[in-house]
Image (cartoon, rainbow, N blue to C red):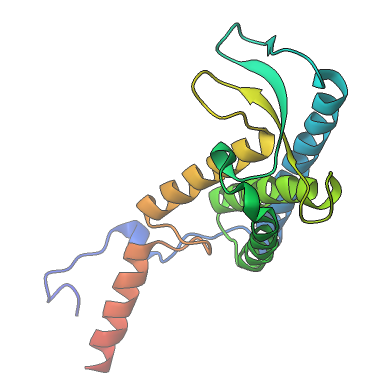
Length: 196
């Protein structure tokens, strides 16, 4: 039927979707990335508070990367200083959304991306909850400084890398469940043709 319509399938397409690892393996990857990145963020902040408080910038890679401790009550670029509680509540919502989406993960790249996103959001949320001046108003510990860039932390790095991976997967047309947009379109067309 498809050959008659001038459409040919490659051997890969004819064989159907590739076998994907069991969802459990992807969930374990997601959990491992989230827990290890979260631990790295929390431990690095504890170290920074202990060793960098009341110190001038410490060169790590000359002036290209320095360690300088600040406590940030706002969002990126120290904006929205009066909305700390709002940022905290949005972070709680983000954690719930990531955990919900992660239940459907079948792609290794998506598992890593969601794990990093959860670690980053949770890392900064931990500061908002447990650090001074109080619950949901705590200041985030930032200590990594690049030239002409706001001071940041490992949680911010996790969020940025996660965002890059999510954009990459979107451009490749790969969904959280590991399916490709093109394959979904062909399936929808095939179902429509079957109904005719």
